[in-house]
Length: 165
Image (cartoon, rainbow, N blue to C red; front, top):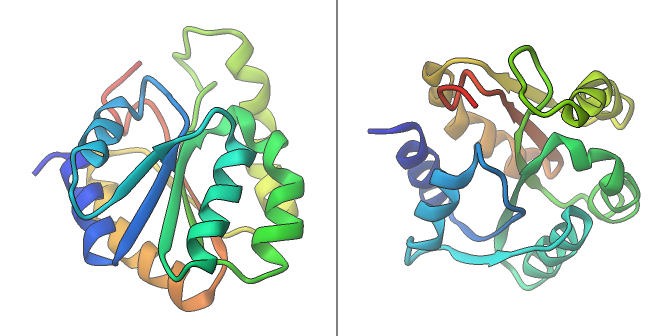
């Protein structure tokens, strides 16, 4: 089973019924598979903080939700994460493509990579970092932990996890 297939299967097995995504080249295959999955309602977002608002609405409507996005937008989401997601104890798995590391072909992506982990740590958001395809075996347990603890959780996935840029 591919990494993308495993991720979609783990979302379904953990009863995630709503996922919003912000386009990213690294996440393209899993986004395509989610879009075709009958068990998951997929609504693309224009911006990450907008997506978190959609996830909050799904949560308040009784659905488990998740967001997929790039790390370069973490700064945009800070207010939403703190005043909505954390304040109301909403579990929110955030599958995040971690752009800007060694090998990154787009220079502007590098600056946010320097700050991503520190911002998540400052917000007290549990963070996991997937470097190798085999790391996907942790995804199911991370989802279970997210919904049990009622907290947002960040899963950073770098280019090596997705087999390069």
